[in-house]
Image 1 (spheres, one colour):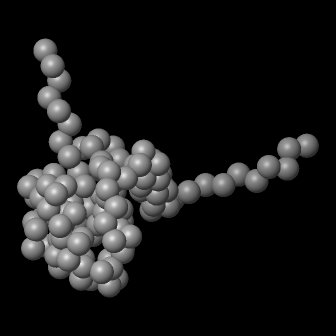
Image 2 (cartoon, rainbow, N blue to C red; image 1 turned 90 degrees about the horizontal axis):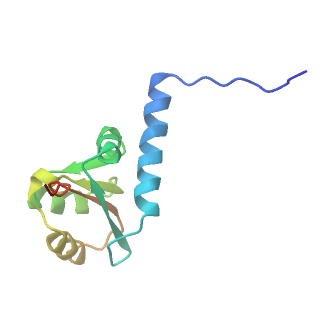
Length: 116
């Protein structure tokens, strides 16, 4: 007799799980930089970025001034710098150098155009 218990997840639980998987897979690929205990991870505009954007625990940043505000926010541990922000990796590193709080920062990048 099979005594395995069947577990079902509702939509919110599935979304939360997908966001955790996306974060873990991105982090497992490795950080591109570390500044003062904060780590920066690149994330392409694929499913991972889509899931990270839906994660309520991730603060999305769309400008350099928003990045500075987010780095001062003690309740924001994880940030996503959107590709549309125009904020480069060098600007993220410089901003992290100005702030003492440790953060996990995902920086979204556009995938290169396919070569024809």
